[in-house]
Length: 108
Image (tube, rainbow, N blue to C red; front, side, top):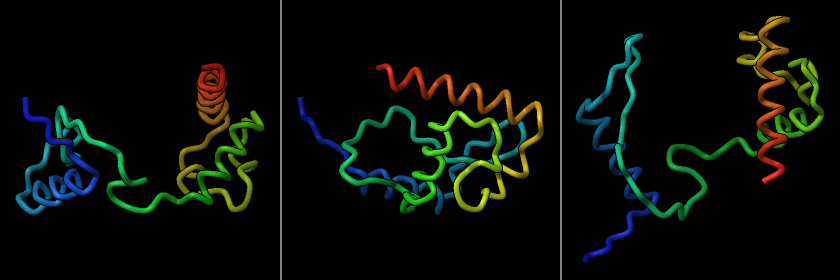
């Protein structure tokens, strides 16, 4: 058996080739995405497409850990996407689910 391990850069090249060749999968809403089905690769880098916003990730984790149900309690400026989708009911329901999953993840 020949075992050729793909790396992040190989996956990046696959995405770029699919994008340049307009090889998109279109979902029921008409949104386009690129699928690489069944890919196994070594995550030898922190990201495939762009550098993660580590500062924001830390702020959001701090917020989850606080168990607050208010997007306004995200440390620093509340991200526009959170404000755009928040409502009293949705905000509380969604954040409670996120908190429950976070707690479950912490217990593993």
